[in-house]
Image 1 (tube, rainbow, N blue to C red):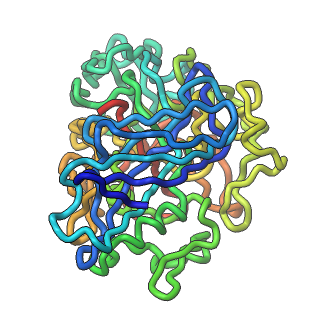
Image 2 (cartoon, rainbow, N blue to C red):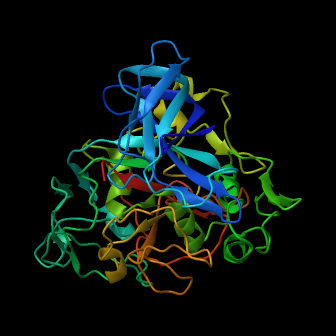
Image 3 (cartoon, rainbow, N blue to C red):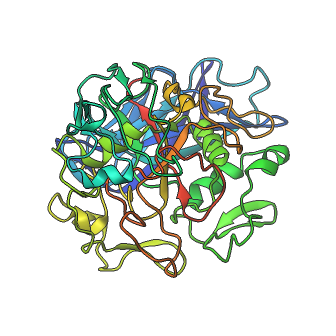
Length: 445
């Protein structure tokens, strides 16, 4: 419900999600954001006030729920504020920022609330690159010694660390004949997000349900660019979004959203107030502060035989051992394909598109967040993000992707070790049933 008291607007709504945690190492959260629905104006983003929020009622025993608003007020985080493991169900009262609504008659106004599950990646140093020379054949980072010879992995301990990419620099990598790993040069500046500072990352890949919610707020002109269901072989290769009576729907709302092109993803990230992640942030979320081991996947071992979270015939990810996430622990996270910080599917589902260090457009990325506002044609309005279907550079691929059970498995697909970056500098923006991405947000910005 939307209320207005003494010129101040706020919303009261219920929130719930399953298998939440705060375990001392990190916590999960929901990123919550709002869109207004005004007569004659369609959907517009509503910013959140810095204060004035209230957890009205908590229905989950033992849960202390917190609300945190970043500096830009584009949304807010809701998370367990102390040690907790279980489901969340609560009623919240969130105050909106002054001036969030158009200066028109408020009668008939309404709002929609959206949320996506996130994982908090805490502040701290970590290691990028390969602990073994085998990974060098797959474009892995390493610390060069004497004309590009292998000198070990690289420690990142400062967010503003500057790295020279060169044979005698601070970071280097080898390339194959196609140069898909990157240009092997340049300066990774202080402004490129390293992952040392804390940030939030989507717990799962964007789902069909989340993309459907996004599509249903767009104008007809915006939909001309962002509708993905008309791609060749969309339904044959696993897509299930449909349009029924003018509304987009999905039979499988929790399924990873296949066929997201880069520009589709950037529009969604901007609309949701998030941003793309960098190669270094991918590594931090996957391996945490642990010393890397040769060939390790995001769950910490070089063995993929325990994986029980697999795509079924509809491309939904299911636990074939019938466990649910309440059973996940540090000891068995490999069965769930979960990373050091319990981020799911960083290997084995869809390729994770990242902001590469292998191209000048990628290296110039500064981590600017989306503001909830798209262009009239359905494009992101954040100039610093790589965009465009053309081969303009700036993105890469990590983690491996599932193309179908008829596709031969190999040493880096569909499960790719954390260090492998055979396509770490390849600009692949097109829609494909194995290409994905997930989004992040710098903490407290």
